[in-house]
Length: 69
Image (cartoon, rainbow, N blue to C red; front, side):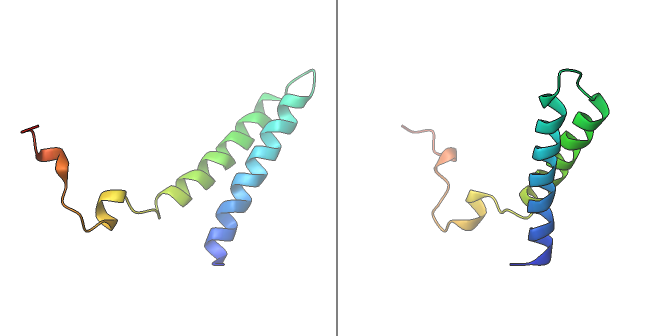
């Protein structure tokens, strides 16, 4: 596995754990919750920008332009 992918998954896992931990207590720590959500979103963004769209990866013609049906 690539080191960049590993870092992205660590961001997602760490962000989720921090966000859950911040919500677990009776008195919520807003800064800790924001940090957890930010780490989670950074990891998700970094993974999603490397994914290709479905229309680019298929060799089939695009039927969305055909309005005759």
